[in-house]
Structures are given as structure tokens and as C-alpha cells.
Image 1: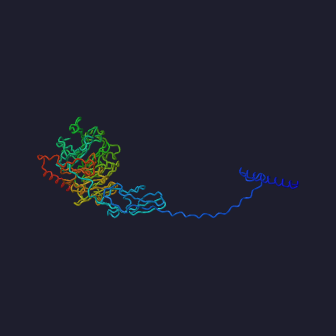
Image 2: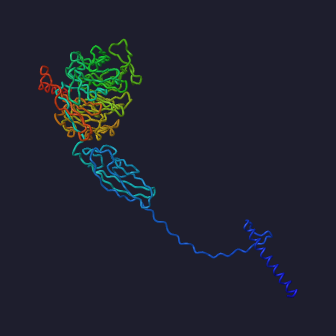
Image 3: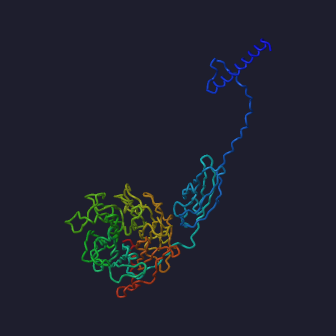
Length: 579
């Protein structure tokens, strides 16, 4: 090899080494994050091959839930629990909820998550509340996922109960003009009730066996007047009876004066009251032998008293509208204190929130009443329901909402919602229910105020039960329908005569309603029978024993049964005459 050729090959080798070194340096600088060589030289970009975009798949159309439940249902009257469950599926697996629409939607409640449907109030076959009043309810159930919804048109038919969940059983007969029943509290006295008779005797009745204690609890027969509508009319026990053993009674004495008295039981024997413990806490002069009222009731420590207007047609003495008179009123007093130590006729205190002061009578809580004979408190709300006996053509139920003082129910300016004597109606409170005089199934002539049912028969809970004394009619009104200032007419009364037909005997002159410690309701019939409204044996795991035998016959030396019935008819005619 010549020197020239060798030099040229050596130079070419050096050039190759320099070129390879440059490539390595550029690669090293790029790996270290540099954008180019240290001498500013750049590497040409590698050309890319264009790609074809992938085809776009359109999103599936949104779909609503689909119902899978039936479009009709039947339910027995009186059913409050869930009777139908709406079911649906969502094709896209989305969550959804249920809601209601349609003309009868307000009759129902639905669980938005489970679809469980139930009535908002007790359905009644005899008193349907659907728009068409035919007992077939139309409601739309909507399944909504927040964007889309579907609707199911549901019809619900309420059916009549073939086998009632209750029975009415006669527990006593032959009692002597019973006027009232009141439960005796205490674990050892379940089933015992105080039985108050018009003639002045108070007895202990065992409602399970039907037996009457042969020893009287209290005998006031020598002190009470039974002329006309007089007698032993009212009874109540102190709120803490187990500690105090104190009872209160309201009676008419020989001169017609109304007395409210207090008695205590014997210290070591609680099956009788001690006559020597008598304390007259209130005396009210009364001019006639009718329209006495006669009801007593406690709410808390305060005693409420129903007093009639004193009689005479149309309240000729104007007692009901005279706030200085105690007649024609609901009174409210505190019997635990004495604001009048110098007055033997007033052994009580005036509650500080009573509405009136002198010259008005401070005892007055409400006024404008004719004969508030039988009244009761709703145990849930404290509302006071008043059965006020009418005169010309109307019987009425009034209500005092809890803790609302000073209401004027209008007698004798108004009788129910109808003008009677006439005059200004400003400030008057109309009845919450009324019915006309007559002999039809929703008529009568002498109302007997009742009770709000809170016992074991589910479909009756929340119903105000009441009756007429002269006509054998028993009714109810849902308390959920009652509004102060609006009057329910008899067309809306639920007639209960058929379902409250007793197993034996006849309910025809209801003079009072009672309630025991189980909250069973009792019908006190003036002719001597006492009935209990209770669950049918098949409806209760532990039915109470029945006793249909009469516990005590009316003493023949006192009055025969025929004479007793005759006297009862005379009292009825007396009420009809409205003297």
C-alpha cells in the first residue's frame, strides 16, 4: 500500500469515527432532555404516516323504567297497612323512585323507594272517599329516574268486610239507670270499672266476669234528687288516683242545686269511698229540673265541668250568653288549691290562663251551650268534644281545641248552623258536626257525645264515636276530617248500627260511652244494659272472657222491669218535649 493511499484510508477512518461520535453525542443529549446539540445543530423530524380515525358508535337511546306490577288491586275496608307494592325494572340499571298522580292520589301514601302503597286514612266501604264515591279509586303510579318516567294506571277497589274484626258483647244487664262508666286504675284492678247509677249509687263492675261487687263503693241515694233530668250525673277520678284515692262527682240535691263534690276512699280499704270525707267544692243554683249538663273530666290537674243552661224554652233566662253566669258553660277550675277560703261554695282556684275575670265568672272556659251532657277529651290531641243537646231541630257536636279559651258556641242565637233566637253572629264558633231531628238513620233528637276511639280495632282508631239517645243510631266521624270552623253534615256520618249490633240485647238508648284500660269502648244503655265493643276472638291472641249473664237483677221491691222501662220512656218523652 502506498503512502498516499494509506493516508487517504486513515483519513476516511477518522471521518467515520468522528461521524459515529457525533451520533452518540446527539443521542446522549436527547436522552438527557436537551432539545438539541450543544453547537445548535438540530436533527430533522422523522415523517409520520397519517392514520384513519376510528368510526364513532352512537350512544344508545335512554329508556324509562318498565312496570311489572298489576294494574288493579282489591282491599278490605279498614285496611291501613301496605296492600299493594308497585314493582318496575330499569333496562339501563339506573335507580328510580315512585310517586303518585291522578284524581284520587290524595287517598294514598306510597313509599318512594319500595313502592309500598297504603291508604292515608281508613277506607270505609259504606263511606267511600274517591272522586266518584263508588269505592273504586283511580290513582297513577309514576316510576321516575330523574330524566325519564313511566306511568301505571292503578284501580283500587275497597270491599266490604264479610267477617267484622270486632264484636259487641253485653256484659251486664239489670243495672238501675246507669249513667256512666270509668276505669279503675291499677295493675290489680284491670277489668274493673266504676258504674254510676242515676239514683246515686256507685258500684264496682268487673267487665271480664260481668259481676258487680255486692258492696257499694259509695251510696248517695239519700242525698240526690232524681226529679226530671236530675240525678247523679257526672264522675271523674283524680289524675293521681293511686296516690290520692280521690273521686269527684256531680249531682243534683233536693232543691235542684248542682253540686260538685270530692270524696276519698278509706285509708286501708280502697273498694269504698268514705262518706265522711265529702267536700263540696262547687255549688251552682239551678232553677229547673232539666238541662243540668253533668259531665266532669280532668286534663292534667285541671277539672272541666259541663253545665246546662238552666232550662226553659230558648234559654229564656239568657244564661248561656251571660258570661257572669255558670249555666250553659264549660267551666275550668283547679281543685288542688282554694282561692276562696271564706266561701264554702267555692273550694278551688282559678287557673291563671282562664279567659275571663270579674264581672264575668272567672270559672268560664267556653260558653253559648244548651245542655253539654256528655263530653270527652281526645287522648292524642287534647281536643275537647262536646255533645250539646238541641231544642228545635238540630243536634250538634262542638270542639274546643286544646288550650283554646273563650269560645262562644252561639246558643240561643244559633242552634247548630241555623238561626234560633237571632242576633249578631260575630265571633261565634259553629259546630264541627250536626244532624237534624227525625227518625231516619242519620237523624235523632238528643245527642249523646262520645269518644275518640284509640283501642285495639285498627280501622276504628281516630274515629269519633257518638250516638243519639232517643233513636237507636250509632255513628262515627274520622277526626282527620274535622276542621274548626267547618260543619260536617249527617250525610258524611258513617252509620255503625249494623256492625255494632250486639250478640245479645239491644242498644237503643245510649246515655254514655266509657273506655277501659285496654281502650275498649263501652255503650251505656239507659235501660240497664252495658255493652263492650271489642276485638273478635279470632282477632286477638288472648280474648277476654265473656259473661252474658246478668250480674244483678233490679230489686223487685224498688222497681219492676216494666216500671223501669216505662220511666225510661217518660224521660225520653220529656226530652222530646223540650220544656
